[in-house]
Image (cartoon, rainbow, N blue to C red):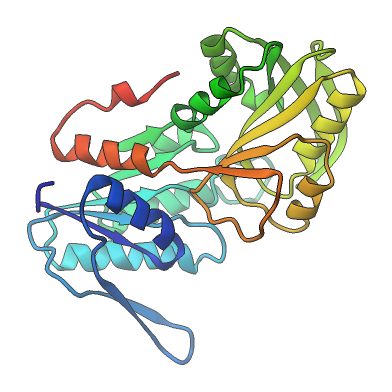
Length: 310
């Protein structure tokens, strides 16, 4: 591969970054983090980036030191005269704060986008944003990839005869419809009502699931409450099997216990975030080849539309 490319990683995404660099065909760049006793840290590139296209791979989940780390790495690359700085953010933190849904609250996704752009990123690469409109929060080009490119092959390998795609909420119906259309499958929607975040007051199924093999499709899984409850209701409604596909395995709180004790056959996720605990029900598919292919396309000024299955 051309030596014009440099790939670096923040500390949160080293494992994924190593896979991407290997798939692309270049070693991961050397960056050292200096830590001060009060918790402050400073990244330092240990090789020249002058005139290079620098790809910085870092997901930004809490704690938000991960976001600050990305910002400092972007700033350091800018001050070291990198030609282009592409922030590769597999999981874009604060994406759920994409609008004012009540008085006197921030739009966190817009703030994070402003910070990354202001730090000096000339391009953003990410996958399965919580809301598509977040692309418009950035003042630089955004390559918004889709996990379906990876997940679709796995779904087809299951050879499910009575496949039905399900959305765990009304907001995800567009994503589920795209899967259903591509796979020529039926589709159902779960209607849920919340009183507060992470707690569901009521859930109903719109459509028939009796005798069907259900695959729930979502962009992320946090505590797992929605998917676990959806699987239970669907099985009680006569579903033959229930699986779930989620790009971002946030898996906080009691998520691992919830998944293990659920009626889900399996949970299929990508490696945008590392899996903290081993679970017999969680299957991880890597997105490293997808990102490496897009990095190659960007380097050669080629279209990336061939990467989108749906």
